Amino acid sequence: MFLIISDTHFGTGPDENLRRKRFSDILRKKSSEVDKIILLGDIFDFWVEYHYLIRRDYFDILCLLKEIAQEKRVYFVSGNHDFFRLKFFEEIGIKVNKYGFSLEINKYKIFFSHGDTLYLSGKLTRFILDNPLSNFLFRLVHPELGIFLAKSFSKLSRLRTGKMEPPDDMPGYISKQLKKYDVVITGHLHYPMIKLYQNKIYANPGEWIADFTYLILDNDYIALYQYPDVLIKKVEYCKINP
Image (cartoon, rainbow, N blue to C red; front, side):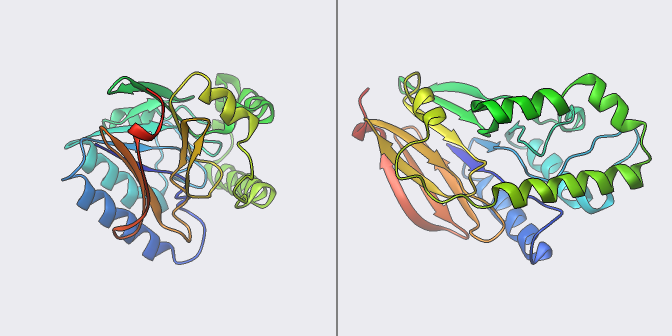
């Protein structure tokens, strides 16, 4: 069984202490029930990784993730606010994947991605910012200025995208993945949903800013919940073609 959370964007948003407490609550509670935890990107509003510096305002969340990673397998799929190497996450025991990964459950192929690298503009943004040269140049900037620039960039990104309305039809970049997989799970849209599409399933855990939603993926179903444990929707794999 998997717990899937995305787009918590710690470091910005209303009631930061409440959001962190609820995140801690759900990870501690569900870690005793699930086998693996998948963080589908943008856990922090902007991740800046220096060689010898850890941001003070992220410290409690990092300690929590390290504690959970010692007990359960934790996967981190980087998002459009997670451009840097994420080496620190690997050092505290978290499995990092920059562009997504797939697995098979009961012969069903399931694909996990933050979602931004599935379309052209997202790929271009990653190409520009997520490369060794950009990382090196950014580290030359004093951390106070660097973090200020990172916060400014992050704010512009959130104002540009915001919380997207649920699509009437499946976005092309998602339907393309559904030709290859039985279940596709992404974050990025900030909208919680489970949708059947041509006998396939698309799911999004939503965000942890206002909705506090998450997904549970088991051997024979996928379910959308809202904190603390309110079931919103559940779909069994038997409803899609094997």
